[in-house]
Amino acid sequence: MNDQKRIEPRTLKGFRDYLPEAMIPREWLIDTARRVYRSYGFSPIDTPALEYLEILTGKGSDETDKQLYKFQDHGDRWVGLRFDLTVPLARFAAQHIGQLGTPFKRYHIASVWRGENTQRGRYREFMQCDFDTIGTLAVAADIETTLVIHDLFHALGVDEFTINVNNRLVLSGLLELFGLAERSAPMLRALDKLAKIGREKVAEEMVAAAGATREQADRVLRLSEISGTNDQVLRELDAMVAGSEKGQAGVAKLAELFAAVTAAGVDPARVRISPSIARGLDYYTGTVFETFLDKLPGIGSVCSGAATTIWPAHIPKKSCPASALRWGSIACWRLWKK
Image 1: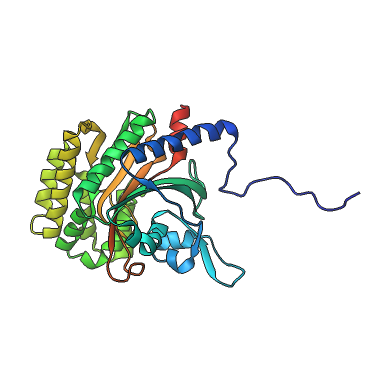
Image 2: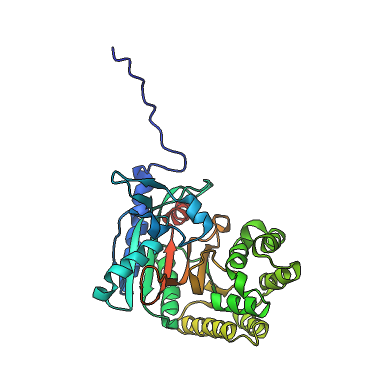
């Protein structure tokens, strides 16, 4: 008789198996995304799950660095599992953009890993379905991004959703006017938590982590009090950033985006200009997006991202702008089941 201890079959905390009843609709979601992406001219790529650790660290935030799965491989090299698909894209672009040319439109559907606290609908291994346009700062890329999100959710049979948009230039211009330009990164990371922890705790974090005064924090948080139609929000934002060239450029980009997608036939109710949306990663520089399912607001954003600058450390001679969006299949699958 074998005395070897029996191994209990179980999955690690934060990870899951997919049985056929879950995998079939999941594959349908992914196939639908591929079809929509290709209809707009996006091409597929893939990158390794493991990257050199130096590629991954310091590219998102302190929080993402803490969540990295990292180890030394058999060659004593420090490596890590990718925590998103955008950072590997920066390395990919540095190696291959000369061959591919710009603008380059890619999509990438693959698993990522984050050692974060698990909660409903969030796991430590999950799939992202990214699409990106690399090598252009044109508003046309942001307009196309909005149209892709719109068509994607309609193709999934989800008609009740809201695409929230903002522009980091508006936020940067506002911080500039308030004398907080040097502290923009911690200020915007705090603002990004508004929906999760509320106004008071965000103000406290702005004071504690960014060194803002309470008056400065309250002035920034006035963004969350702006309401009305998109045209009304744009007018109020324009007044708030008067005197900041950067802020006014951001408002102009938002106005152009909203006018274009409306002219393309998108229901204005599906797109909302939301001045308090910041997105917490430090490399976001332009238009930011967060998409919510109207029937399941509690699960948070299911399609989010922003215009980014791929880091000079990866591309020695210049930064490479990209409009980068990602969505998670789990939340959409749950809505599909309902």
